[in-house]
Image 1 (cartoon, rainbow, N blue to C red):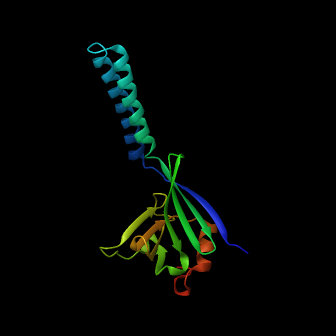
Image 2 (image 1 turned 180 degrees about the vertical axis):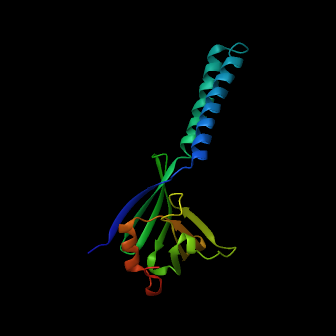
Image 3 (image 1 turned 90 degrees about the horizontal axis):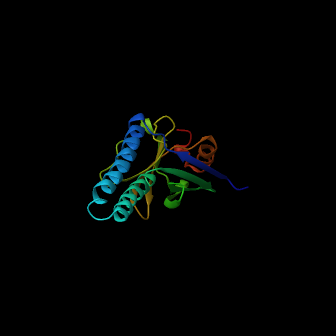
Length: 168
Protein backbone atom coordinates (compact mmCIF):
# COMPACT_ATOMS: atom_id res chain seq x y z
CA UNK A 1 0.00 0.00 0.00
CA UNK A 2 1.27 3.46 -0.91
CA UNK A 3 1.87 6.06 1.77
CA UNK A 4 0.60 9.29 0.27
CA UNK A 5 -0.39 12.61 1.79
CA UNK A 6 -0.80 16.14 0.53
CA UNK A 7 -0.87 19.28 2.61
CA UNK A 8 -1.30 22.93 1.74
CA UNK A 9 0.44 25.31 4.17
CA UNK A 10 -0.59 28.95 4.17
CA UNK A 11 1.73 31.49 5.68
CA UNK A 12 0.41 33.22 8.78
CA UNK A 13 1.16 36.93 8.50
CA UNK A 14 1.80 39.09 11.55
CA UNK A 15 -0.16 42.28 12.21
CA UNK A 16 2.85 44.37 11.15
CA UNK A 17 3.05 42.52 7.82
CA UNK A 18 -0.66 43.04 7.19
CA UNK A 19 -0.40 46.76 7.97
CA UNK A 20 2.64 47.18 5.72
CA UNK A 21 0.80 45.37 2.92
CA UNK A 22 -2.13 47.82 3.11
CA UNK A 23 0.23 50.81 3.34
CA UNK A 24 2.01 49.63 0.18
CA UNK A 25 -1.29 49.24 -1.67
CA UNK A 26 -2.25 52.76 -0.63
CA UNK A 27 1.12 54.17 -1.77
CA UNK A 28 0.91 52.38 -5.13
CA UNK A 29 -2.54 53.79 -5.84
CA UNK A 30 -1.52 57.29 -4.70
CA UNK A 31 1.62 57.21 -6.88
CA UNK A 32 -0.42 56.10 -9.90
CA UNK A 33 -2.91 58.92 -9.34
CA UNK A 34 -0.06 61.38 -8.74
CA UNK A 35 1.57 60.40 -12.04
CA UNK A 36 -1.77 60.76 -13.84
CA UNK A 37 -2.57 64.18 -12.34
CA UNK A 38 0.83 65.68 -13.07
CA UNK A 39 1.54 64.19 -16.49
CA UNK A 40 -1.96 64.68 -17.91
CA UNK A 41 -1.80 68.51 -18.07
CA UNK A 42 1.84 68.55 -19.24
CA UNK A 43 1.79 65.91 -21.97
CA UNK A 44 -1.60 64.41 -22.67
CA UNK A 45 -4.47 63.14 -20.54
CA UNK A 46 -4.45 59.77 -22.31
CA UNK A 47 -0.71 59.26 -21.79
CA UNK A 48 -1.05 60.25 -18.12
CA UNK A 49 -3.89 57.78 -17.68
CA UNK A 50 -1.91 54.99 -19.37
CA UNK A 51 1.29 55.63 -17.39
CA UNK A 52 -0.63 55.95 -14.10
CA UNK A 53 -2.53 52.74 -14.86
CA UNK A 54 0.69 50.89 -15.69
CA UNK A 55 2.29 52.00 -12.42
CA UNK A 56 -0.74 50.82 -10.43
CA UNK A 57 -0.91 47.51 -12.34
CA UNK A 58 2.81 46.72 -11.92
CA UNK A 59 2.73 47.65 -8.23
CA UNK A 60 -0.25 45.43 -7.51
CA UNK A 61 1.29 42.61 -9.57
CA UNK A 62 4.48 42.91 -7.52
CA UNK A 63 2.47 42.77 -4.28
CA UNK A 64 0.42 39.77 -5.42
CA UNK A 65 3.65 37.87 -6.05
CA UNK A 66 4.54 38.31 -2.38
CA UNK A 67 1.55 36.13 -1.41
CA UNK A 68 2.52 32.47 -1.42
CA UNK A 69 1.88 29.11 0.18
CA UNK A 70 3.61 25.75 0.30
CA UNK A 71 2.37 22.35 -0.76
CA UNK A 72 3.88 19.21 0.75
CA UNK A 73 3.39 16.00 -1.18
CA UNK A 74 4.60 12.85 0.55
CA UNK A 75 4.81 9.70 -1.58
CA UNK A 76 6.50 6.50 -0.39
CA UNK A 77 9.45 8.03 1.42
CA UNK A 78 9.87 11.20 -0.65
CA UNK A 79 8.71 14.62 0.40
CA UNK A 80 8.20 17.11 -2.43
CA UNK A 81 7.83 20.75 -1.45
CA UNK A 82 6.39 23.24 -3.93
CA UNK A 83 5.98 26.97 -3.52
CA UNK A 84 2.71 28.30 -4.96
CA UNK A 85 3.00 31.99 -5.77
CA UNK A 86 -0.21 34.06 -5.84
CA UNK A 87 -2.18 30.90 -6.72
CA UNK A 88 -0.85 31.30 -10.29
CA UNK A 89 2.63 29.82 -10.41
CA UNK A 90 4.13 26.69 -8.90
CA UNK A 91 7.82 26.23 -8.26
CA UNK A 92 9.43 23.03 -6.95
CA UNK A 93 11.64 23.93 -4.02
CA UNK A 94 13.09 20.56 -3.15
CA UNK A 95 12.54 16.81 -3.05
CA UNK A 96 13.74 15.10 0.12
CA UNK A 97 14.40 11.38 0.47
CA UNK A 98 13.31 10.82 4.07
CA UNK A 99 15.68 7.86 4.52
CA UNK A 100 18.60 10.23 3.87
CA UNK A 101 17.79 12.63 6.72
CA UNK A 102 20.68 12.89 9.17
CA UNK A 103 18.97 14.96 11.90
CA UNK A 104 15.32 15.71 12.60
CA UNK A 105 13.25 17.34 15.32
CA UNK A 106 11.23 20.28 16.58
CA UNK A 107 12.27 23.78 15.54
CA UNK A 108 12.95 24.77 19.16
CA UNK A 109 15.44 21.89 19.54
CA UNK A 110 17.38 22.60 16.33
CA UNK A 111 21.15 22.77 16.76
CA UNK A 112 23.14 25.60 15.20
CA UNK A 113 23.87 25.24 11.50
CA UNK A 114 27.26 25.24 9.86
CA UNK A 115 28.20 28.27 7.77
CA UNK A 116 27.96 26.32 4.49
CA UNK A 117 24.46 24.96 5.20
CA UNK A 118 21.67 25.93 2.81
CA UNK A 119 18.47 26.76 4.68
CA UNK A 120 15.07 26.25 3.06
CA UNK A 121 12.15 27.86 4.86
CA UNK A 122 8.87 26.19 3.91
CA UNK A 123 6.90 26.58 7.14
CA UNK A 124 3.77 28.45 8.15
CA UNK A 125 5.55 31.31 9.91
CA UNK A 126 5.02 30.07 13.45
CA UNK A 127 7.29 27.90 15.55
CA UNK A 128 4.42 25.95 17.14
CA UNK A 129 4.33 23.08 14.65
CA UNK A 130 7.61 23.67 12.82
CA UNK A 131 10.18 20.91 12.40
CA UNK A 132 13.69 20.87 10.98
CA UNK A 133 15.34 18.21 8.86
CA UNK A 134 19.03 18.06 7.97
CA UNK A 135 20.13 16.15 4.88
CA UNK A 136 22.51 16.25 1.94
CA UNK A 137 21.06 17.47 -1.34
CA UNK A 138 22.60 17.03 -4.79
CA UNK A 139 21.59 20.57 -5.72
CA UNK A 140 22.30 22.44 -2.45
CA UNK A 141 24.82 20.30 -0.56
CA UNK A 142 24.31 20.29 3.22
CA UNK A 143 20.73 21.46 3.68
CA UNK A 144 18.37 22.27 6.54
CA UNK A 145 14.64 22.32 5.85
CA UNK A 146 12.16 24.07 8.13
CA UNK A 147 8.60 22.87 7.51
CA UNK A 148 5.22 22.48 9.25
CA UNK A 149 3.74 19.03 8.60
CA UNK A 150 0.24 18.10 9.74
CA UNK A 151 -0.44 14.88 11.67
CA UNK A 152 -0.95 12.67 8.60
CA UNK A 153 2.22 13.89 6.88
CA UNK A 154 4.17 13.54 10.13
CA UNK A 155 2.99 9.93 10.58
CA UNK A 156 4.13 9.09 7.05
CA UNK A 157 7.50 10.76 7.60
CA UNK A 158 8.03 8.84 10.87
CA UNK A 159 7.57 5.52 9.02
CA UNK A 160 10.54 6.28 6.75
CA UNK A 161 12.89 8.09 9.14
CA UNK A 162 16.02 6.23 10.25
CA UNK A 163 15.37 4.47 13.59
CA UNK A 164 17.58 6.77 15.64
CA UNK A 165 15.52 9.82 14.55
CA UNK A 166 11.97 8.48 14.94
CA UNK A 167 9.53 10.14 17.34
CA UNK A 168 11.84 12.99 18.29
